[in-house]
Image (cartoon, rainbow, N blue to C red; front, side, top):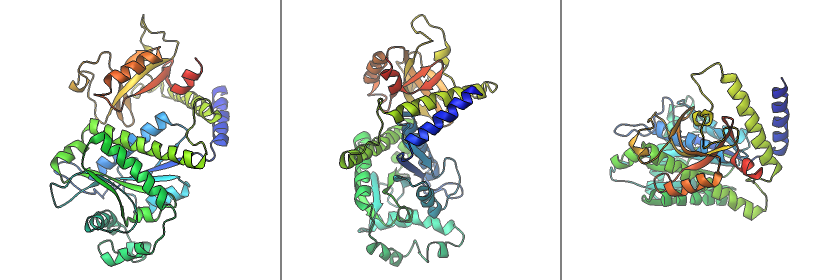
Length: 390
């Protein structure tokens, strides 16, 4: 009862400090009976969802002051207008729609990021038509979208006369994400473009649509379904979003991303810790869903289990790899954790943050998306908060 009271109080404090928390809506394109583009062995809807949940996971873990909302977090069909409505209802600050491209030209490849605008080229028009055609699966789409025909070029004339008040910010965000994706993947840069996407048209905030690659290209399809490449892409999108937020801070002079000294960060970290502790108590009777770290519970001569334990998260996988997977070759004492988004793999358990930081630098060529996490008594805690208290 006492713990619940503390949690409620901390939650109210968090809300009061975070009323205007920066909100990011992550939209995994397609889903349910809408498979999206289909490759030789995979479907776009699954690729999109995997990337969206990975990006959301990264934001939640590293920037708990940012609110993350998904238009879908499972394999369900969500209408285009409802995707935008979800963002509008939650007064989101940024909408990022994640998609996978396809082309009749099997050699077409590369990454491109769109903002709302006029399709100046045939290619841009084809991409917009492909993504907008999902409305044909919706009941009464003629009245919902005011007679818009996704397959008629005449319907796109309206975009000529639309003035998007968020245009400049959308383009800026698209540029940050595109740059990070290309720098990370070294793949073909198809650039930042504009096109008439209905899902972007209906949002009342800066909005972008990312095309991660071509499922119609066999090599790109393999990469889009590879765990390591998915994490690499998600890391790049995450970094692009953070770079965009930093640009807003510089331009407006307003602090959005909290630091370890801010009251909001402290409240978030404390509330997260207490909530996690409560979760562990609740799940204690359900051993099939462990929420604590196995390494943190192991007694070791080198680790003080009563102190904060830092670890390096090197990989997230949708399937169980096992600690002897070739991808971990050369790594010791690998920890595997079952999570809702799949399996997480960690190394380097230590009470010394700097030791884990050095480890991160030494493995960055093999695990570029690795980052440090912290545990106290088997419960996940905020890394920055632990360092502040040292």
